[in-house]
Image 1 (cartoon, rainbow over the protein chains, first blue to last red):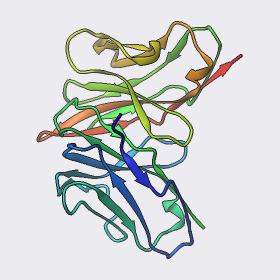
Image 2 (cartoon, rainbow over the protein chains, first blue to last red):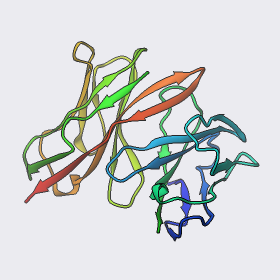
Image 3 (cartoon, rainbow over the protein chains, first blue to last red):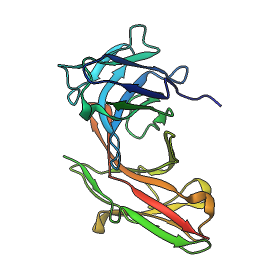
Length: 115
Length: 115
């Protein structure tokens, strides 16, 4: 069964360092999402891609976060510099299209701890 | 703007007992509603969804949910709890922005099964 892959699964870093997360969506899925899930809360959308284009990054802290999906397949989310408040689970999801009601398939996430 | 309220951040039920997890939503458009389950250190998995049509929706693992427009609710139920149901459950509502689906999640309910 096709799955969304994410790496690393766990990342510990010190504040002010740079970190990067990678996501490989299900083959053929045009839409890719990055979510942040703070402990005890539901996921919050950071950025949404349609193919290689960003369609929503309104909740992405652009002073320190960046995301790209250069060839419209896999994607990288970067934080530079990391802050203590960035400690969270970062989830990647993909869907066949961005049409309403389309199921989003989630990866296992990257748990980030900032010391 | 859309929002989701999940009543009860923690719910405990005995094995074999009825499971009831509550979700109320707010949406400016006819809602699409989802329930996702998250096991420890894993991503989210779709349990069921309501888009249009029949208001009683059946999902995986014996779960079902009923859309009640008059009550703006989409509560999740399972007649008989199993130990493997222990997990965190998230209700979500979707809003389509020019064809780009956006999910808003509730804060989650942690379900504990008592042997």
